[in-house]
Length: 65
View 1: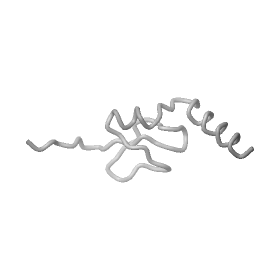
View 2: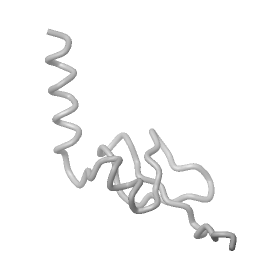
View 3: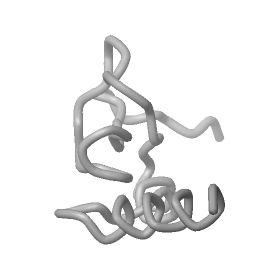
């Protein structure tokens, strides 16, 4: 019965609101974080709304040649 509740919660979180999931967040250069973004990051969207945020860096990273 516990697994059923877990599955229902998971389905609810993935289908709720504007949640795009961690793959979409990581693909666009963000990181999924629980609670708040760390200093130097901003909320770009939600991985699982409203608990898990997709945070992106304020300054773009530069690649070394």
